[in-house]
Picture 1 (cartoon, rainbow, N blue to C red):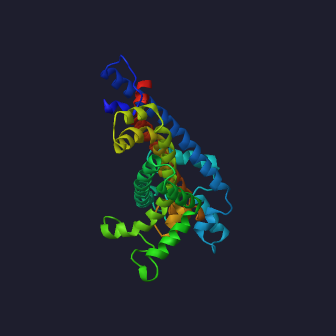
Picture 2: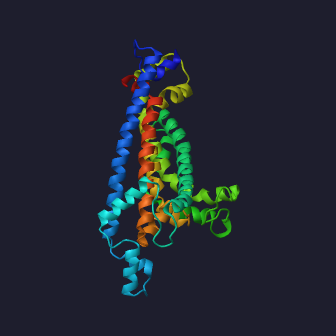
Picture 3: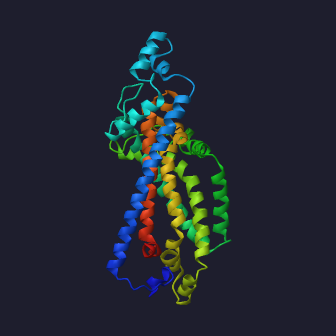
Amino acid sequence: MADTLSAPPTTTAAGPATRRGGSRRFAVRRVRKRLTHLLLVLLAVTFLSFVVVDLLPGDAAVVVAGDNATPEQVQQVREELQLDRPVLVRYVDWLGGVVTGDLGRSFRTGQPVVEALAQRIPVTFEITIIAQLLALLVAVPLAVYSAYRPGGLVDRTSMTIGFGAAAMPTFVFGMVLIVLFAGGVSSILPATGYTSFFEDPVENIRSIILPCLTLMIAEAAVYRQLLRSDMVSTLQEDFILMARSKGLGPARILFRHALRPSSFSLITLSGVNIGRLLGGTVIVETLFAIPGLGQLIVQAVFNRDYMILQGALLFVAVAYVVINMLIDLLYLALDPRVRRDA
């Protein structure tokens, strides 16, 4: 009977097969809706980026040809790169290549965009996922205990530190960590650079510790505050009071019955942050000289490398929408009320 206390009891005449069928139909509808959303987002993001980059001051042909190139050489480069054509025509041609899996080649190096992304995405993905996991490992226990003892020493201390961490720029944390762990006599971790896990697993871990901690600090502060607020509200619900009246221990009530219905906002925010960080780790990657996707986007903007920029933005948009679609499906597994409404 204790397992039924995690949500208000609801009676239904539908059998298990009917509920499973409803869940599957609900999941199919969610996936179909998200795929439609994905296509619209991709069209909007890629087209707007094409137009905005084209309006930036400077000429990509001049950047590629070099400062000492003659006007004739610049014009030749412009024609070779097809930059003399209208932006809408170039966008439609690029979109046709995307459908066939061809994202074009870099204006600067001639490297296929798919190959450039394949080199950079794993680096950013590794740092982002590890930072998010560390943030959750720190935030969830603090939030649960703070909700259990609101106004206590742990609650007040973590809240104060969290507000300060959320208010500070990310690069400040990075510089402090470099001074503490990579500068002077305490040089126990590398300040810059990245080593692939397949080259040297130990050096890989050492090279990503400081970037991950830099990203983790502010994220953990926000997660802790969000989950703590939701859990304080959940602990006032009738089914929690019933669980207490039956003599269940605090740990069972907190982690078994209160944490799950309080975690939906946290799951949503963490998923959104993963999508955001995949394309937004520019400061951290620049500070620690990490050859990731954020650094690639910055280089593409300065070099007017339209093809690299378009490919990177395409990946970020796809990742963002796909992650949000997975969150929707996760709701289906976590919340029985969603399955019943389906």
